[in-house]
Structure formats: C-alpha cells, structure tokens
Amino acid sequence: MWIKIVIILAFIGIVGSLASGLYYLVHDKGDSRRTLRALTVRIGLSIGLFAFLMLLIALGVIEPHGVYPVPPNTAPQ
Image (cartoon, rainbow, N blue to C red; front, side, top):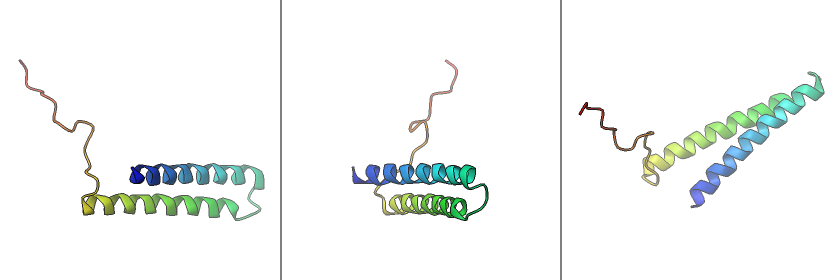
C-alpha cells in the first residue's frame, strides 16, 4: 500500500511542478529562471519515479503486466 502512496505523491509533485512552470512562464515573461527551475524539478521527479519503479520491478516487489495480463483468445471459432 505504501508503494501506491509514494507513486501518487510523485505524480502529484510532477503535475504541480508542471503547473508552476506554466504559471512562471506566463507571469514572468522570461525575466526569471523560475520556469527553468520548475521544469528541471519536474524532470528530476520523473526520472526518480522511473528509477524507483525499475528498482521495485528488479527486486520483485511489483510485477509489470500489459493491458491484457492473459492474452485474449484471437482464434476464430
């Protein structure tokens, strides 16, 4: 359960950083580096989340699956 909470918090952080980057882009009109900093934080959070998920998969804590965990029966009847 704690893994889901960490992933959701990371997504909220990514979306919040993206929103703040948009806000600074619109309101600062290129006069500050806050947009760059906000988008850098977003990229860092995204890479960190990806690395965290890959680590959990490697350790066997979570198991990845596709849209169809069991292949659909595609043979004509």
